[in-house]
Image 1: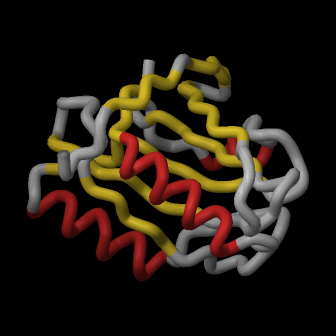
Image 2: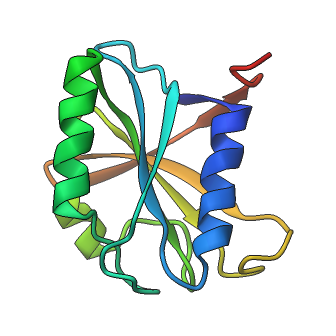
Length: 143
């Protein structure tokens, strides 16, 4: 199960809406071994595409160095789908290289960058096997 603070969930959704019609992507880091997402890190979709996301390799390397220096790891790896449901594509499954991470997908297909409900779903992806998991929203970290 993914347990995520409301403000971080809202930040992920806001990023997905802001980047629509292109896919948004990013990471939520947390203390190593904690499974607790605490630091929201929006990234640039280097592909600039409505159907594909790609982390910029220089930005990703800097992020991993920063997380290492802070004793953090990627707890959530997120991206958006702009025209399809919030379910990992074959490409998404192939890119899933963090076995301990929760893979969050947000679908902005119904309302784009306007207000309105979005699909917010989380998965574990290990060795190509996709397992959807429940998401529990907790009070914001600033509360």
